[in-house]
Every structure is written in structure tokens, then in C-alpha cells.
Length: 349
Image (cartoon, one colour):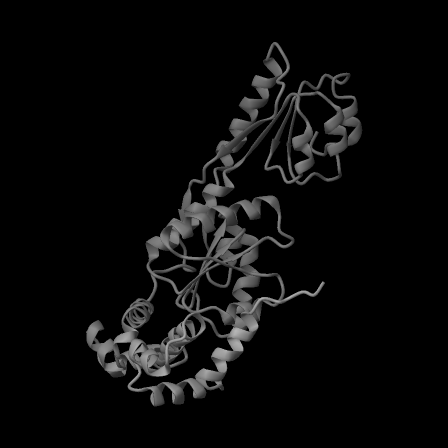
């Protein structure tokens, strides 16, 4: 029957039903009845983990959600360098959403990138806080409306500021989105045929299947639409500049040294930093030096003069001036305060 009921399960054998093929979610909670019955059952796209408790004559067939996450990571990596890789989960987070995130995060880690996950609170504040351009992976196509609306409200361009990739390749959602949505296509048709074949095998088996069987089908591929594009060269330029600064900051480099290394004019580099970092090259150099000074202050007893030489400052006076400006404390006071905070707490008695 098109609408499966509790009585259908309870009287299945009496009514000549040899097996049941179901998708999720069901119209009502039939899981307890499925757990009590031993009729052959194939579950497609299971979202009810209670069904895994059944041990006899049951098989699960689903898309390989981990492979979907890995495919998203590989796809974004093929487009170029993004400043942020982010994930918009199913809310409340479901099993398949968590597995897709797991695959996405694991593959991005192999590539050398981390993943920022939406915490479910304020999507506008969250997406504005991320460094642009963003590679945004949606748990499903249906999340595209929330993501694109947030971009529109905050004047973020798709795909130049935010490249968005969904899952399911739902033609209605993807083609009618504000910007046509690129999406990973699952093997839905193949899963349908395979589900029938598996159910037939279980029903024709001479002895009952004594353990759950889980089949996972890999996704077909990514269907490109307008919501994704290669990253703009300016993002790669800024990323290379920051890497050069972090690597050479202790040698006393200036903003001109950075632009000379990259082969661009100081004016162009300054413009790109203002657009993407909301700061200047000089400011980035100083803040990187200050971070290095903090590490040395907190781990050694070196005098300020030696620390200045090690971190690229002209003199200890120059270091002290910049430190006070950015940290709102003298280096000596900061060191003492840090030592006090890190000191072990002694318990009496």
C-alpha cells in the first residue's frame, strides 16, 4: 500500500505480503511494530536509528554520506583557494548530516584546511564573521534558502564572496534558488533498483538473514550551477602575503618587502588587504610580531632588548611602544600577569 499502517505490518503474512520496502520518514511511528516483526524489510534512507536494533531479515540502503562530504571537499579544492571552508548542518542535526560533516572535515584536514560549523544561533552574524571568500557546504539543498537570504541581507555576493554547494540536486530547489545552486547528485535511481533486488534476495533466502545488512552507494557527482565558481585571484594573493609575513616577520620585513616578493605594487596589495582583511599590510606585520613577542615573554626570561632583535623590532623602545599600543599593557606587566595566571593553584589541607 502507498500508506503503510500499523495493521499492515501486524497482518502482513496473513494478507500475503512477503516483504516490505520503506523509505523514511514514515507517516507515523511504525518502528516498534517493525522491531517486533520478522517480515523481510529493506529500509531506504534510514533516519530512525532504533531500527538498527532489529537483527533479523532487515537491510539498510542509503547514499554514502561520508563520501558526499569528501566529494564536497574535493570539489571546493578544485576551484581554488578559499579563506574559509564552512558547513551549514541540518537543524536539529541528524545522523546523515553529521556523517556528511565528518567526511567533509576529514578530507579538508588532509588538504590542510579546517572547517567552521554553524552553531545554529544567528546565521547573519556567523556568515559575516567568516573571512571571505567562503566555500559553504550545505547539508542539503533545502538549506540554500537560509544561506542565500543571509548573503542577500548582508550584501554578500554569490559566488564571489560565498560559493555555495548543496546535496540532492533537487531540480526545483536548485533551479529556483536566488542563484542557481550547484549540488551533489546522489544515486537515487540506482538505490531504488538496488532496494528491490536486495528485498528479493532476503525473501528468497532459505534461512533468515541473522544480522542487519547495510549497503551504501557513492554519490554520482557534482552538478555545476551559478552558486559556485573559482576563487578570485585577489584571495590567493592575500593568502600568499600572510604566509610570507608569518614566515619572515622576525627578519624586520616591511610592507614593501611583501609586495616586492609577490611581484605586485604596494598600492594593489594595500587595496586587497583593505578589501579582504579590513586592515593594512603594516598592521598585519605588527600584530604578527606582537603575537611572537607574547610567546617569548610567556616562555622565557629574556630581556626586552633581545626579544626585540628576535622579533624584528628596531629597538626595545620600539617594541614597548607598539606592545602598549596593541595590548594596552607594558611587556613587563603583561609577563608578570601571564605568570600569575599560569601559576599552579595551591590547595591547603
